[in-house]
Each structure stands twice: as C-alpha cells, then as structure tokens.
Length: 157
Image 1: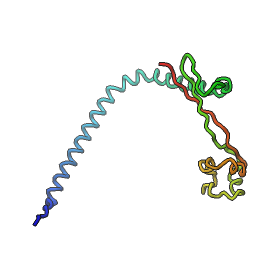
Image 2: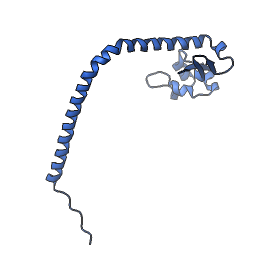
Image 3: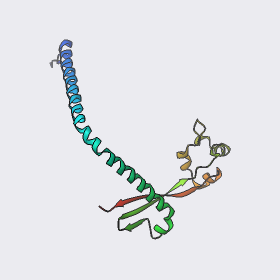
Image 4: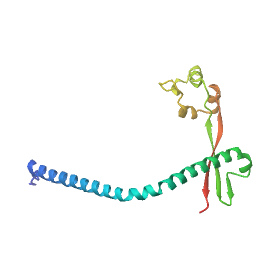
C-alpha cells in the first residue's frame, strides 16, 4: 500500500517562506542602492547631452510633420505613378485606407435610422461600429466613406 507523503509542518514552511521573503527584501534593497548609484553617475552625462538630444528630437518632429504636410499638399503629383516614390534621400510610401467621414449630428441620424446599436450610452456615435457599415447604410445616415492617405518614409542610411 502506497504511503501518502506527509506534509511538512507549518512551522517549517513558514520558516522557508520567511527566509525567502528576507532574501527578496535584501535583494530589492541592494538593487535600489545599485540603481541609485548608477543614476547618480549617469545624471551628469545625461544633463550634458540633454540640450542636444531635445533639440534634435524637436527638429526631427518638425521635419516629419513638414514632410507629411508636403506629401498631402503634393499627393497627386508625387504619387501619380504609384504608392512608392524613390528619391535620392529615401522612399516615400503612401497608404490609402477607407475611412468614414465624421459628420455633425450623427447621433440624431443614427436614431432616425433606427440604428441605436451604433450609439454609445454617452450619446456619441460608436465610430468603430459605424465604420463597419456598408456604403448604403452609411448613406442612409447621411455620411460616406472616403479614402484617407497616410504617409511614411524610409531614409537612406
């Protein structure tokens, strides 16, 4: 007959648990001290480079916004031959996705069309659900689907 394994006495388990808890606590304190020491040594270096890093980040954000705006203004000309345009400095990529035009009064239009399932409790349109409607259903509530261009780019390294 097989013998059941006897459970360790609670006091022994509590002792093991307590030991592990003490070790975890000790390691956390050691880690916090080590991280604080590293942060203290790294801080002057980061402070020295921060103005340059911040300036470059802002310049990149501005250049990115300007490039996307230029793509939008010159979309027909730039992308006449397709959705990828090779340039000496990189590649422009246009992604065209259909999206539903957001109109004023959509909640009233949805109510009038009997589409209460597309209205959130807060009395706003559930645009994700509205976007899933077919074109006839969109027309019935007074909106339509249009193409929206998004632009990305790859820079030559």
